Length: 208
Image 1: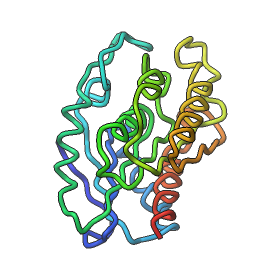
Image 2 (image 1 turned 90 degrees about the vertical axis):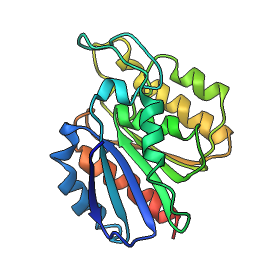
Image 3 (image 1 turned 135 degrees about the vertical axis):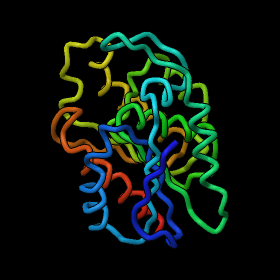
């Protein structure tokens, strides 16, 4: 698991972001935008090898293309929590798309994170809302966001994403989580770097 580091390595605020190759091309823009909120952070971009396997909490059939979803989230989670052993620091985790689903899932696994930023998360993932209904978040600050055109797709499963994120938002509020749901303009692929910076910025703002 390769880790790319940005920001102030001595910062108390450690941001963790699971990324794929497609994210790394925009990470520098994300950093520039994040610096508009604060420069007091240390960002660890954790490169996953197999996006559909490493970030999926359980197996599920393919929704687009031919590749289904594996069940590698537990292994990825175990590796990421090894980065969170310094009790003098505050840890936050954020992710985009399937990584957004993964980080939301981590909120139900551990209280090590002070905040979770699930940005354009794949909450259409089969069974995930039912999982949220059956469990309580162990993290008390969760940021959600979605593009206002993300549900406009012919894919029958992915077209439910707006309804599912509204449902997730309501569930978190019922559980007493400090949460917000921010709507961004555009489809799933519009300005992911800006959306991530906004998510991390929201969490760090709460920590001040």
